[in-house]
Every structure is written in structure tokens, then in C-alpha cells.
Amino acid sequence: MKVPPQIVRLLIVTVVLVGSYFVAKSLLTPPTFGELGWYRAAALEELAQHKLTYAGKQECEVCHDDIWQMFHAGKHQTLSCEGCHGPAMRHVDDPENEHLLKPGSDQCLRCHQQNPSRPDWYTQIDPEEHLEGECIECHIPHNPTEMPEEEEASSEQ
Ligand code: HEC
Ligand code: HEC
Ligand code: HEC
Ligand code: HEC
Image 1 (tube, rainbow, N blue to C red):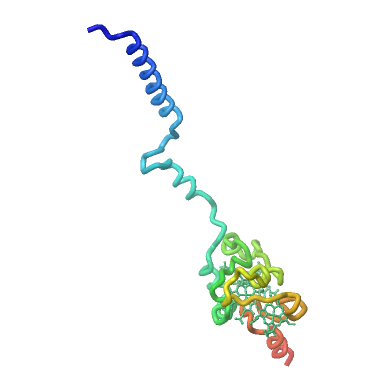
Image 2 (spheres, protein in one colour):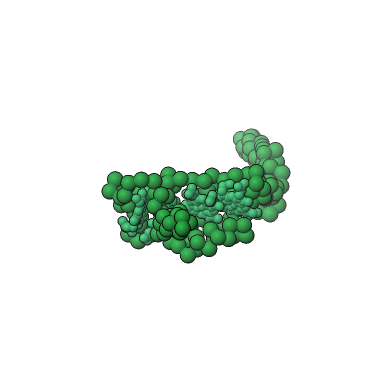
């Protein structure tokens, strides 16, 4: 039986299309793709090479035991140290030379500014109506319901 010429042309077009798909696939697929799954296996190693910048809260206890104790007796105990002080990995490795941010009252309103979208249990203030002055003149940031004055009063004696 003779194959009709229009079928032959159709077959050629099909072979060219399917063939170019396989050629393109072999050229464009990155090496190591699919070794472990639908991603580049080499990406795991690349990601693992990123330098760590956050040390994690647990690291601070060893050297800042006093602040640690005070912090966990107070209402800020669930917060992360680095949330206010910034990434601390370099500081943990070399505290004498790598200094951290010592924030001021600017941090406080980030979390305590009155905002109707915050839940009721989350204590919020209206800075216009709350007592005037720097927040940390009246609140110890590591135990915010304590007032620094008491400390000063006892050290003056
Ligand atoms: C709510 C924000 C906040 C959090 C959370 C926080 N800090 Fe602080 N920290 C401050 C502020 C503000 C100061 C500066 C206080 C000042 O100048 O009187 C400070 C100062 C310090 C200092 C310097 C103390 C000094 O006398 O010079 C150390 C050390 C410190 N923090 C460690 C920690 C550790 C460790 C944690 C976690 C257990 C932590 N901080 C969590 C806000 C915070
Ligand atoms: C290996 C001990 C060590 C560890 C771990 C450590 N610190 Fe410190 N930190 C120090 C020393 C020492 C200083 C005082 C440095 C100075 O005055 O030169 C200091 C100072 C600070 C200060 C005051 C600002 C500055 O950099 O001088 C802050 C804030 C602070 N540390 C926060 C932290 C936090 C948050 C962590 C946990 C992520 C942490 N530290 C972990 C030893 C340590
Ligand atoms: C990262 C968010 C965050 C930051 C920054 C922060 N706080 Fe808080 N604060 C909290 C949470 C969470 C609580 C516990 C829930 C509560 O009591 O509202 C709390 C509790 C408090 C309380 C106790 C409220 C009560 O229950 O009577 C005071 C006071 C306070 N913070 C003051 C401050 C001051 C002053 C600063 C700045 C040095 C500050 N906070 C920074 C999250 C934050
Ligand atoms: C002059 C001292 C003073 C200053 C400055 C001050 N506070 Fe207070 N704050 C207090 C006292 C005292 C209380 C407890 C009595 C009260 O609720 O008014 C308090 C209570 C709070 C509470 C708990 C409110 C509640 O409803 O339970 C939060 C949160 C707070 N302050 C955050 C801040 C922040 C944030 C700043 C800076 C923008 C700040 N404070 C500045 C003295 C001060």
C-alpha cells in the first residue's frame, strides 16, 4: 500500500516538532535537575552555603545571663532578642569587635502603637495620650512593667 503524500508531510512535521522538544529539553534542563526531585539537587548545597546572620535567642543566655533572667521574668519573654537588636551571628562569634544595635524608644511603637487591627490582649497605647518622654526612661525594655528609677534609687544609697 502506498502512503499518501499528505500523511508523509504530516509525519515529517510531527517528527520535527517532537524532536525539537527533546533537543530543547536536553539543552535547557540545568544539570542535577531531577536527581532528587523536581528541583536542582545542587541548589541544596548552594543554599546551605549562605552565611547565617541570625544566631537565635538561646545563644545569648551564656554571656548575658542577668538580662536573660530579667527578660524571662517579664512580659516580653516571648520576644526574640534579635527582633530588637538585629541579626547577631557576628556578635556571638566576636562580641568585643562586632557590636549590636542598642535600640532606643523607637522600637516600642512598632509593636505598641494603637491599631484597631491588633487583638485586644495586645497592649496598645496612644502615644499622644500616654505619658510624655522616652519610653525607656520609664520602662526597662527587658522587663517593661519595671521602672528604671528603682534601680537608680538603690544605687544612689
Ligand atoms: C523590646 C526590645 C528589646 C528586646 C526584645 C531585647 N532588648 Fe536588649 N535592649 C533594648 C534596648 C532599648 C536597650 C538599650 C537600653 C538603654 O539604653 O538603656 C537594650 C540593651 C541591651 C544590652 C546592653 C545593656 C547595657 O547595659 O549596655 C544588652 C546586652 C541586651 N540589650 C541584651 C538583650 C538580650 C540578651 C535580649 C534577649 C534575652 C534582649 N536584649 C532583648 C531592647 C530590647
Ligand atoms: C560570647 C559571649 C556573648 C554572646 C554569646 C552574646 N554576647 Fe552580647 N555582648 C558580649 C560582650 C562581652 C559585650 C560587651 C562588648 C563591649 O562592650 O565591648 C556584649 C554587648 C552586647 C550588647 C551591647 C551593644 C554592643 O554590641 O556592645 C548587646 C545589645 C548584646 N550584647 C546583645 C546580645 C544578644 C542579643 C545576644 C544573643 C544573640 C548576645 N549579645 C550574645 C558577649 C556576648
Ligand atoms: C516585637 C514586638 C514588641 C516590641 C518591639 C516591644 N514590645 Fe512590649 N510587648 C510585646 C508583647 C507581645 C507583650 C506581651 C503582651 C502584652 O502584654 O501586650 C508586651 C508587653 C509590654 C508591656 C506590658 C503590658 C501589660 O501587660 O501591662 C509593656 C509596658 C511594654 N510591652 C512596653 C514596651 C516598651 C517600652 C517597648 C520598647 C522598649 C516595647 N514594649 C517593645 C511586644 C513588643
Ligand atoms: C513618664 C513615664 C512613662 C513614659 C515616658 C512612657 N510610659 Fe508607658 N507607662 C508608664 C506607667 C507608669 C505605666 C503604667 C500605668 C499606666 O497604665 O498608665 C505605663 C504603661 C504602659 C503600657 C501598658 C498600658 C496598659 O494599658 O496596660 C504600655 C504598653 C506602655 N506603657 C508603653 C509605652 C511606650 C511604647 C512608651 C513610649 C512611646 C511609653 N510607654 C512611655 C510610664 C511611662
